[in-house]
Amino acid sequence: MAGIPAALRRLVIKRANNHCEYCGLDQISQVATFHIDHVIPTASGGETSPDNLALACVSCSLRKGARLSATDPQTGAEVPLYNPRQEVWRDHFQWDGVRLVGTTPTGRATVFALAMNRPTVLLIRQEEVYWGRHPYPSGD
Image (cartoon, rainbow, N blue to C red; front, side):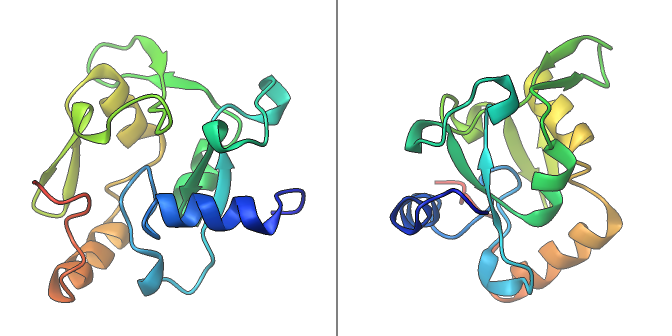
């Protein structure tokens, strides 16, 4: 978290509406503070700028790490991970209740690589349903 100015951090959080830009989890229900993720890691030349930063829950951030790609479990092809600064979430993902479904190779690879449907996160999403915070983004 060091190295990201407070104003830039606030911009990223506000733009994401306080939700993980990968899995949609609401920060309000979590104890751990979400990370400001470099979509393109600094090790790969990514800048610390609004165009390269995304709000990520701890789980998505740590599982993504410095990766730019992952294997699509359906085809076995190496494909880019979802980029919330350049792509539209709904173009790659949809909800099946509390399960997140990747609808494209990028979506499937991201769901698989970031383990977005682990039992624990499914339970968290069930609680989010109870509080009216799931699904996010909503289906509108």
